[in-house]
Length: 186
Ligand SMILES: CC(C)(COP(=O)(O)OP(=O)(O)OC[C@H]1O[C@@H](n2cnc3c(N)ncnc32)[C@H](O)[C@@H]1OP(=O)(O)O)[C@@H](O)C(=O)NCCC(=O)NCCS
Image (cartoon, rainbow, N blue to C red):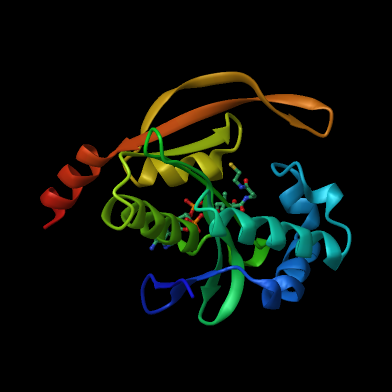
């Protein structure tokens, strides 16, 4: 089973059926806050909806097309981070994430995302990591910005959020840029 120790507070655990209750609760308790930027909140009204998400995630993982993990913060489920898609042809991983409202502001997502960036380059030998966020979603945009991603451009009407189209900003980090950052930190 995939478990990744990020640091003494955070670990990432491959999502499975046993997480359905905690992940549904986390979603349900943060519904209003998550709804601002996540299009699937109104379609997640009962635990069965979270089970379907987990089932789809497991299928993607089994087919090497993606990876969703539960972020454990001091042992407690804090949110989800993962590769929504791995494009093996072009060696690109697309990262997506969310946190329960009470877990914001502690650097959890920045650290968890850094771990999946490292894993993509070190273990999966990918060439690029891509993160997209709505232009107005400042908290989400801060994550790739903190991790040294480059802003590559904007996609107009990249997402339909509850009847309103929002533009997306695309961030990318190439393997050679990541290697350079690691070398200068060493
Ligand atoms: C996007 C989202 C995950 C960001 O959460 P976050 O708490 O701001 O991100 P982090 O966990 O990385 O924490 C960063 C904050 O902790 C602070 N922090 C504390 N310790 C830190 C550390 N070790 N490293 C980095 N930041 C740290 C930072 O200064 C920052 O605070 P600030 O916002 O006041 O500047 C969250 O807002 C969310 O789930 N939003 C709704 C869903 C969503 O938008 N998903 C993304 C769709 S593209």
